Amino acid sequence: MTKITTDTATIAVFDLCALEHKIDADGDWWTYDQSEELQAEIQNGNLYLINTGFDGSFEVMVDSELPQVHSKPINSPSKELYIVCGEELPAEGLTPELLRGGIRYHVDASEVHISHDQVGSRITIHIKA
Image (cartoon, rainbow, N blue to C red; front, side, top):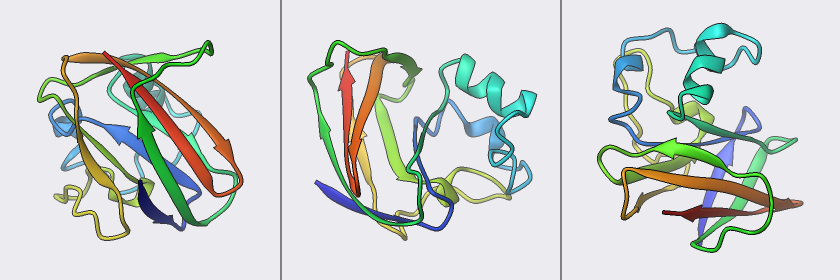
C-alpha cells in the first residue's frame, strides 16, 4: 500500500517508456479531458487516469486480481508502471520523482489489463498480465 497526494483529483498509471514522447510537452497536456491529445494516449493504452473526485491524500493498494468489471489494456514496454498523482505525469522536461507519494510497480508483461475500485480515499488498482 502507498499513499498518494494530489491537488488535481487525479491518479495516473503509465509506463514512462510509453509516454517518453510527452517529456517536453506542455505541463497541462493531460488536464483537458476532451483534448484529442489526451484521448489518443488513453485509447492507445499509454495512460490510465483515475478521477478521484476530490483533492487530497489517498491510500492506494495494488493487486493482481482483475474483478469482473471493464478493464483497459495498458502498454508497459519497460515492464515498470508508475502509479503517481497526475501532477507527476511527464511534461516540461520532467519525469516522475514520487514527490507526493506513489510507487514504481513491476509487471510481468509488456501489456497488462487494469481497472480500479474506489471507496472514499481508498483506491484499489487491479493489474493483471
